[in-house]
Length: 483
Image (cartoon, rainbow, N blue to C red):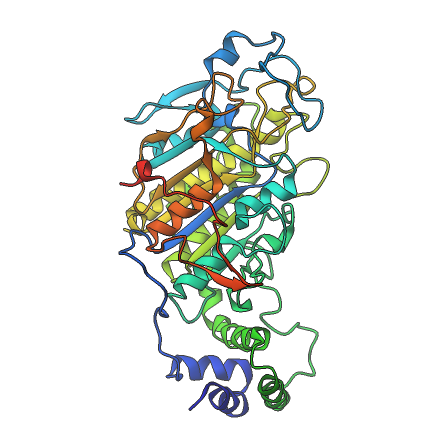
């Protein structure tokens, strides 16, 4: 039975979306389990979770300890060269807003606001010499999310979906959990499939809302929809789709839409269970910050709400990963103007970074501990990223300007050597200490693909006579981070 006749049969005799879901679960023509992907060598990881801090998190206040900033706090900044500032952020040197202290066997210095990560710091690999290409949020976000600093290119999760396929039949391969307040710069373009087949784009899920997956079910006001009408309507749609597809053999959009309908049918049964975190034990929900006690936190940090939202997304991500979702992207912060609820702290680092960083640290620490206790950490990659860093000099009295010249990422999990640091920034945290050997975002993307069994130069898609790839024409695997 070919794909069209199978679908036509299911639409006409399966009782609409619910019927397709039931028919699929009871023995559809498509085999269950992972679809065949392109594996170039034995993988260390099979899943990825990307934690994206929208707005540009300050490496200097969280992860990259610089005693020189403490010693010279308040003195006139001197970078030794002309600095192209994004705004007026070249005031005196500015020390970290939180005290740093060592954590773990590795003795990694962390700011107090992210101290919950101290419990798992021996599993983390920090990259302190990462450089960007631009201090503009939209372009820098594109670079981290898609490997290019302009629109029109697939998100990293799309490439992973395209290269490896799905590990499940009932949930999307690539899921995006946006900030509960809205999208970061570029919105859905960060996870769009661009020129890849449309089925590989990210699916948005909003944990904790009344309608986590938009349009999965008919609205309650649609009383006129009956099972008979739904069956007849879908049968007609199937015939129209078949005629359309027959005339447009090279157009992937219709095929992707048909697959999305089939997936939606199966998700009607699978998604509610996957998203129901009330099934989790109370101690797990508490570990993720869903029952946070803000009294135990620094007095300037009112982060109970942020811990709940970010922890909820991290817990949902774990539930999705263990049910076969291949790539989950979790966003913190949105492009919402004022008052800021993102990491773009031009005016007030404590006000903005305090709640966001503590909520992030609680959720991310819980995620890593949870993956470990479930035996999933060894084959799950965790990437913490942001679009660029922030300057070591002041903007106003409590803010920091954009710094694309150096910033921090960290990795953990499948195939990553924990408790290490790769690369250093200079004494101020302004640029890489060794500028000739700075880390590029392409190197991080190449390393992630490598750990998933893919050689980044060989994962390509022909577009406009160019073999496009996630890493463009760049990228080297960071071998020092491999376990």
